[in-house]
Amino acid sequence: MFFKKYAIGVAALLFFACACNKKAATSATTVEYTYQQVSPPFNADSAYQYVAKQVDFGPRVPDTKEHKACGDYLVAQLKRFGADVTEQVATVKTYDGIKLKSRNIIASYSPEKENRVVFFAHWDTRPFADHDPDPSKQNTPILGANDGASGVGVLLEVARVLKSKPADAGVDIIFFDVEDWGEPETAKDVPPGDWWCLGTQYWAKNPHKEGYKARYGILLDMVGAPDATFYKEGFSMEYAADIVEKVWSNARLLGYGKYFIDARGGTITDDHVPVNQIAEIPSIDIIQQDKNSQTGFSWYWHTTKDNMDNVSKETLKAVGQTILEVLYKEK
Ligand code: AHN
Ligand code: ZN
Image (cartoon, rainbow, N blue to C red):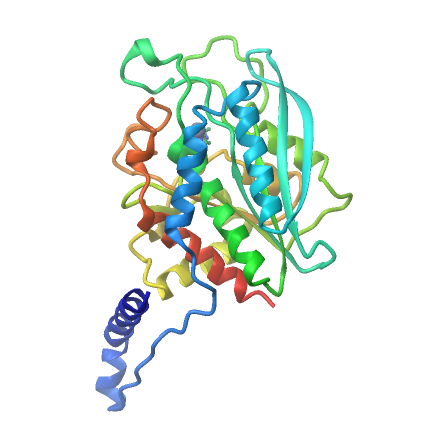
């Protein structure tokens, strides 16, 4: 614990020392800054366990018993962490004409407060590994350790922290369902429509509370990979550039600049789109992008290799501590 704080302090000092060198040369005064973290510690071991637990259920494909069991686990955890939990069940229709039961899970802290922040992630997993290099596996469901479970694991840890130290702002944590049943690129005769993020679209049109508003939203999607790189995503910059800058600058203050890259990334259809466009809550997406891969995401994205080997406690910590820092500064 001591060592970690010390290391962060040194990193911050080095950073500022470099930044200040030029000034020092002209004004002959050297100012030393140490950044004092305001948020309680984010426990990455705990977050990692919450990711592993979800993966242990197996793929969480809507309308399967593994999905049901995992949903029950998420609800129980959030209740244990002192949240007011609402479940929103709906029937949604997929691009391939299947009707599914969608279950959005909403955890509220200080629901009476008007000043609120919403954090979200999807908890379902993709029913087909359509990007698997092995054609015989392209119809198998994915484990979704990174794609799904990582964001949910980080947010469960945020919930645990909120129980022990409430934030000044109200908080909602939403686990959206049926995000990942979007059409494969090779699908034929796909009817026109928005087939990703079905649970989120439902919630954005039918919020769990009439007239629900939050100051801003932060989506966590694929936030567990070792050495993940988070670029400033297109829709996030279009709808909520100030929130992007706030998150990225807090990450840098905490010494996580190697994950939160100060550069623009691609524009991605994801759960923050309906939250921006339909619910009209300015929202950003913290999503791993790999500029060197074919898909723009990690090499194992939507393959059978999206397993716990690709989840790193360091990355979970960088993301979790950063959003806690932003949250606990919110007055
Ligand atoms: C598209 O591939 C269009 N959007 C990515 C959204 C996503 C899928 N995030 C995780 N899985
Ligand atoms: Zn996915």
